[in-house]
Length: 83
Image (cartoon, rainbow, N blue to C red; front, side):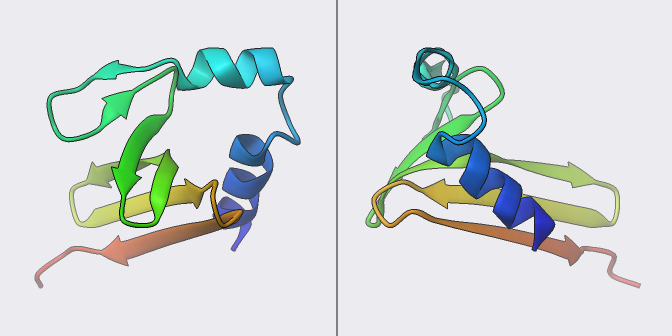
C-alpha cells in the first residue's frame, strides 16, 4: 500500500516540480518494449502510458506502476521461490 501511495505522489506530480518530472520521463529505448528515463520505466499499454519500475531478487519479484490517464497506482510484490 505504501509503495502504491508513493508511486501516485511521485509520478502524479506532488513530489517534484514539473520540470524535474519532464526530465525524469525523457526516456530512451531499453529494447524491451519500454523506454527508460531517470529511474522510471515508461510503458504504453491499452490503459495508456504508465510510469514505474520493477525488480527481481532471488526468490522475490516486484512491480510498481502509475497510470496517468486514470490517476491510479498499483504495486505488486510476490514471493517467487518455488520451494
